[in-house]
Each structure stands twice: as C-alpha cells, then as structure tokens.
Length: 80
Image 1 (cartoon, helix red, strand yellow):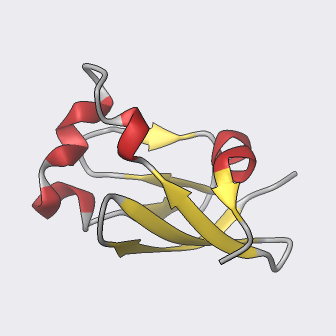
Image 2 (cartoon, helix red, strand yellow):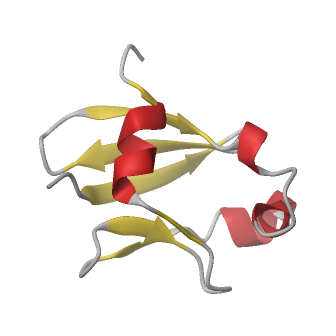
C-alpha cells in the first residue's frame, strides 16, 4: 500500500511528496482548487500548513481536507 511519508509545500500550489516506496515527486494541486471543497486551499496560509496523517498515510489540513494517497501517487510527477 502506497503511503505518503513527507510533504513540503512549494509555490504555485504544489507539494514535494515522499512516499513509503522511497520515491519523490511533485504533486500539483492547482487543477483541484476550482471545486467547492478544495478551493479552501487557495488560502496560502492554509495550504502551507499541510500535514501527514500517519495512520492513513495521506496529506491533510486542519480544516478536514485530505487526499487519498493512491490519488496523490497517480497524480505525482516523478521526473522532477
């Protein structure tokens, strides 16, 4: 099961993510921010306070927003 071990906020609503597989890449959230739930992450103060839910192995924020680790893995650009 793929899990996220680390997430570092970058500019332009991107995260540098490290998975339990040892792989690292960039997860770009920009296209996700137009919907009613994820648009709250447009607030840079909220976005930069990303955390890791150690039980679920996913990225999350204090306002309850989270992303499934499988989705993050599938959408991550590993060529960076």
